[in-house]
Image: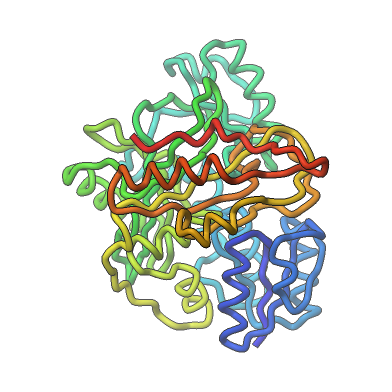
Length: 408
């Protein structure tokens, strides 16, 4: 068999490895010639992976048996579309992929099915009359972007006008959501829908960098701070979403706000979380979401069998940098050998120009720290943050050590 893998980030490395374990030839397509997953694939094409015709041409040329990706909602849309065009298997049909990847359709379905979410308006041009009933602060987001690109919080009409323009330029279709800001803790809910039943895998907190108008994740923290009542709400909402979008066998990621009394859905997609999230899920409950996506695609039915978490605290920290040209990581292997960190990964290729910290896509690397007490976690974490470096081509440490505080 032969598979066309779209996108060449960290999760796709694991995807390619597992495909090869099944003796499936891997063709990787990515727009970046230095994609992280390129060395792992059998064949590589540098193409714009959001160009349907380009992707289709590669699939036809290589005579692939299926297209696949993991942890990438906008890429999943292309996988579903091309698969449908060519009559190839995909665990989600194209129209459903549109509904779960375009926030304007998603929000409409939320409203039609009583799924809790912020009051909002969708627009292609800023119409002040249509948003006059909304209360500031307002959040502006492109309907089809990812990694918090173009997502800003506006406190004034002047900021709203500026951020709306930025978001519409980032949006591929030009549409923008303007919604009321919902205060509380952000939680990331990973689910697997098995035979139409939404089963919770992992609930974690998505901790954001302190910033007045941006939403940049620096940490995924398990377990999330919740109560039994909130978990019950999460289960109910997850099932409502699965039912509303017709998901029968599929991974699902839901981003919510928990204000202590109720949850409100920010957005969701029929995929698992990006970057190192597949590892967090596996360590917290034993379920391999990458394997599940492969199984689904080749016609096998995954079964959810959950295990106890490896540790009480399992945390993915993401590393950001000041502007420069990324050269290498230093000190990470030593931390791994000493058992201070469980793993680490470069999330961007060597030689990449670092612009600073503007969105979650600017993260350069990630580490996992695990412990059974808060004190043990913070001890390990402090050692790691103080010991590792991200060096630029001049040998300077450009890592933003200040963005990685202890757990409270």
